[in-house]
Image 1 (cartoon, rainbow, N blue to C red):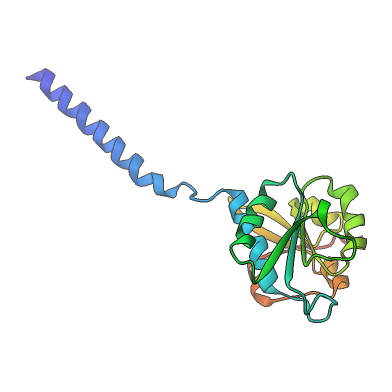
Image 2 (cartoon, rainbow, N blue to C red):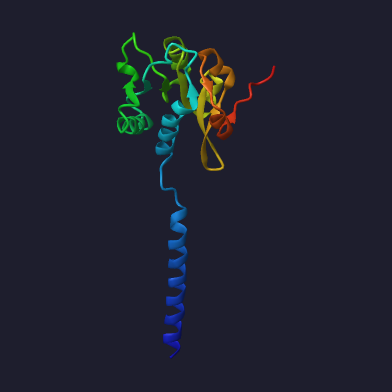
Length: 179
């Protein structure tokens, strides 16, 4: 009798633990950080205005690096809407062509000056506050376990791109260090 009570208690505890475990499972993220960043990148084009730039009448072109998981995910998204946009790898972009949005992860310290000259009317997007400090326009940061864009309006201004209030309202704005 005592043995069956212990077994029943153990069974109840296991069932309770299993129930709590199963209820907690939906709280785990459904999408990876890379997926979220790719979706953000795709949406940035609809939340920016190129009307004052030479790119105003062109089909939106996203550009990214070969070795980037995020660029691969962005490419997959863009390919589902071929009438709206195109994707090119930076390494393959013809010198006569331009990009509306450039996503770069590797070596921002050396890449940014070149990208700023090559794509003066493109949103330059990367990862981390350091990217913005180095001259990038938008960077992905993690705040309270959420991916958010960090935007430097000062760095966007020379490109003549206007960012919509919707984008600015969900972003953190980069505060330039005062001297």
